[in-house]
Length: 218
Image 1 (cartoon, rainbow, N blue to C red):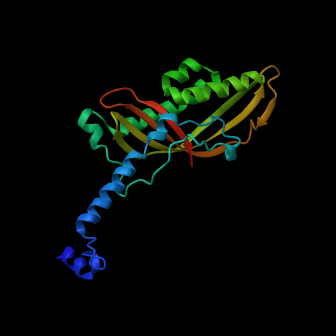
Image 2: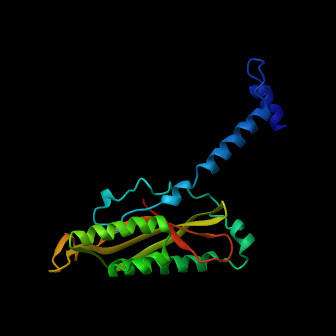
Image 3: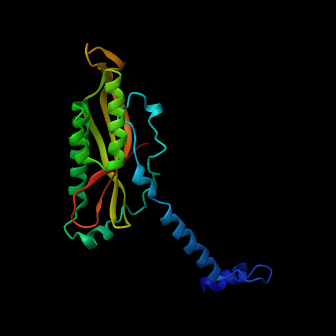
């Protein structure tokens, strides 16, 4: 009855030329195909600076495009098919733990620890940033980290990889010091910086370890 009514209202043809239900479904299918095709390739090169004091300079053209969460929340069904023990609550706790581990490794300028926590493309960007700091004789510090909100905003599976994006809100002291004197040369060691970010984690489908693939500031 619904489609019959639409046909009488004009969906059954345009000037007799025949844009009908089949064509409408065909166009819808094509649109979904393009949506899936261009949805996540940017994750392969997702990256961003670790420093927060210059928030206006944060947004990276390599960061993944963020999407709105579905009204019924993230769908984990594709992950459960290959990992029956997957639990979103347990994953979120692991993501929170990884968030603090990444910040700690950054403070220590521990490239090996960072490499074990994130993907190769993101690691290359952060290695370059650390090299730039060393070349200028500086160290970036992140202290008194307080995570105020963390929630899963999106989850999907594509091309043999699981992806989960977590929305994080936090505040911390973010400042840069001279490596020799310890004097603050940028940022503040007393005024906290508030920020909101979306961290996307990935793994090969199945019960495999997660790594941080991309960071995008809100």
